[in-house]
Length: 214
Image 1 (cartoon, helix red, strand yellow):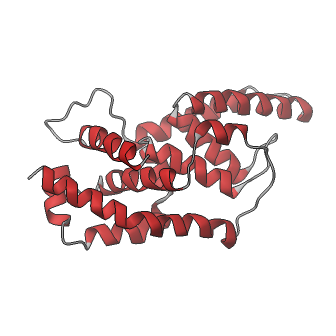
Image 2 (cartoon, rainbow, N blue to C red):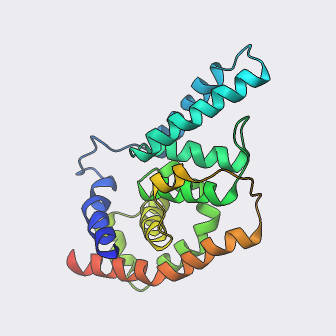
Image 3 (cartoon, rainbow, N blue to C red):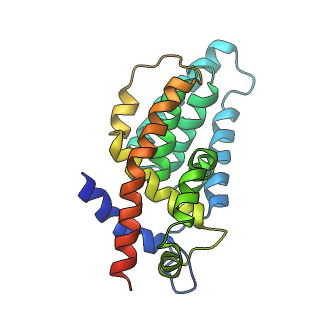
């Protein structure tokens, strides 16, 4: 699985990091991902206008199924929306911090820069480690790192490894029995531990990327 992760990163990382010579046909900015997220929320909300509470709950229950189907098919906006719903709850879903974080890491690993931005506080010290590393200057030249893109570039790689480490899978998440789980340190601890476990692999990957692109 780790080899598959590294191959996938190697195939997509340079393509998704934009500069004047890149193929930008399929690239989306953080703002574009955010707008799609907001538009989808608005579309679903419109369906509840002038509806009673039972009808609203039924609408959100069906939309949960719809978004799960999209998320399993690889729709990163659906993955981000599911993370949002599990963080805040909705008329059909109780909050669940564990599922929220898993969907968020999955969206981030698939390149949703809006999701990665939401993880900024959690990933901040990992970013600092990379920036303070002995390979950072060379990496910046290889990936055209700037103040505007470093979170999306580094965050995607870190999310890849966390998804692999925790065996996060969209289909399994969609099949998970729903239950309420409020934010708590114990639940967050497993994600922090995963981040600590994967950082040596992240550094190793970036060093190898620099080495092979010199």
